Image 1 (cartoon, rainbow over the protein chains, first blue to last red):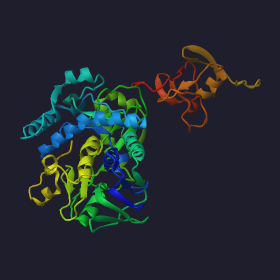
Image 2 (image 1 turned 90 degrees about the horizontal axis):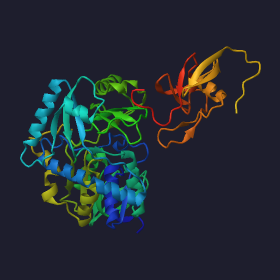
Image 3 (image 1 turned 90 degrees about the vertical axis):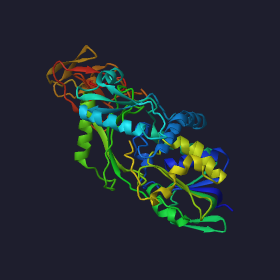
Image 4 (image 1 turned 45 degrees about the horizontal axis):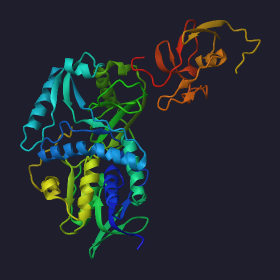
Amino acid sequence: MPNSYDIAVIGGGLLGSAIAWGLGRIGQRVCVLDEGDIAKRASRANFALVWVQSKGLGMPAYTGWTMQASDTWPKLAAELLDQTGLDVCFQRNGGFHLALGEEELEQRSALLKRLHNQPGAVDYKMEILGREQVARMLPHIGPEVSGGSFCPYDGHVNSLRTFRALHTGMAKFGVDYRPEHPVSDIKYVQGEFRLASPNGEIRAGKIVLAAGNANQTLAPMVGLEAPMGPTRGQIVVTERTMPFLPHPLTTVRQTDEGTVMIGDSKEDMLDDTVLNLPISSVMADRAQRMFPLLGRLNVVRSWSGIRVMPKDGFPIYDQSETCPGAFVTCCHSGVTLASNHAFEIAPMVAAGALDKKKLGAFSATRFQKSDVRTSGYY
Amino acid sequence: MFKRFDDDTRKVVEIFVDGRPVMAREGDTVSAALFASGLDVRRKTAVSGAPRLPYCMMGVCFDCLVTIDGMGNRQGCLVPVHPGMQIEIQKGKREIGR
């Protein structure tokens, strides 16, 4: 049957395409059902960090998962380059979070202690560096920088090119990509999933929900849940300049092609067609106090985007008890975790079951407990 | 390639292009003066390093980017010359702090 597949991945963003690429890589017959160009897509509106430091406060399992992703990103970048010829410019030489003033540095230091002291948290090898040490690695810092935290596993990537490489690569693996196929209904009939879309019905033996914030609506159709709490973020982008920033920061990074990205706010508003200028100006002001020379550069773009965000900030990976073969995957860090999605989640989906030992902590059943803690995801 | 009209009687303004004196005319834009100078004034683009010259001459295409009096990425087609102006043909990206 032409519209029948081993696995249908619902959502063709960074998360869905990484899983579909990983499935195609191990020979599965896969289709990706995606929205069209006007989808609110975090895959095209993100800060492109492959980030480790300070992630996992409140969920120690997330520290190990993040480290694994960071460790296997070089393999993903190398395979994509080899397969597609696209260099995603992955760089992992350590990243900073800078503090302006002593109070911010103390707060950062306290946060790292809490993170590190959690039983089961892996060692991120993070250090709090004083101003002089920071200045040796980031020579352009301004007088207000009091110091910062440094993690050697942090890095960044060209996320737009990564997105393109995953799509190019999955096509080469024979994955059918179908845009303009937003899924409106899912039925589980005699061991098979029937997916309704405006452009026809698709059938598959298994499904992976990777539809971002829309997972919240889709998951209950197959006996799963995915409580989401999306937020908006804003970014300011400068003109291209010669390389001056050798390490990425949580809020400032220089891209491989020279632009400087300044991020990143967190707002409850969910309209991504407008900007809140006072917020942009606070972000630009802080960036300029960290690196006064930025004040000479022209801003060429600013934009906002909607974060995919599970309610507590941590990823959700789960499989359905009532509809075997249905999986749900949601996360905020679709760039950082892309390697895990390709090399870990995809083989588990192909085999028909998530590894409980590895992923049990990420089950959405955690939302049924009353004491859910939130992450503060940086 | 470009030649001034014989009856252009505007005042001469001396500017410097990569340190070399060039006689522009009062009211010239930087890009017009560079074209009339007869020098090789091709810049290099920021990412691929492709050679480029001013194109639209009206502030839209950004192919006239040039360093003027120490400030990078100025649009040469929108800036009038002044006596003693220092122009550098920009090879690649703007430098931070310039």
